[in-house]
Image (cartoon, rainbow, N blue to C red; front, side, top):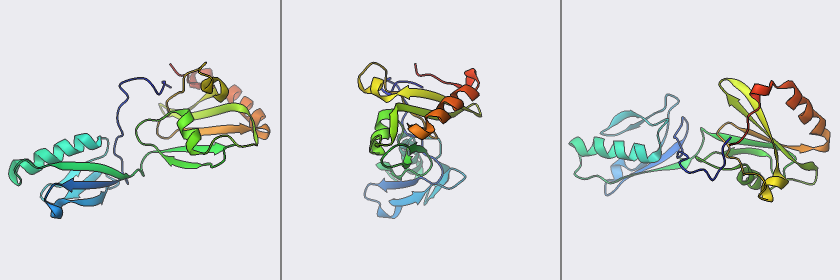
Length: 192
């Protein structure tokens, strides 16, 4: 995992099922909300079907501007905004006040997602949190001490789409230790 403060983190990549607001200045017929298909494509009048998944909104804006400017409009001004983040999620569970699945919007840190879940609840045995992640098709885990991060003694690690954040309760503390022992050492990831 990397620190959330590391520069150069890439922006949000559009994915299937995301809902996009596409606006073409002074052309209301081309301004609309579209859901990205499971194939990763969108279909817009005059442009037709084009790939959206895996691209940032800015990249899609530039491509739409080029496509519309080639044949149909003079100096089009296109804006793409992600209205609903449906393709990329972070799960926060365990001893938090509001467990759930939260949209991932391109970057965020462990503390930010714990804050979205309204912080650790009174059932939390300590400030230990596990983050599970798929790396090269294998499940990996990392253990973090939230009190050390809050005190500035450790970096606040960046989370990625698909991560599962689990805050421990006294009942699950032993399970955490067992999980950490069972996972192969190579499967445990660390932040840089």
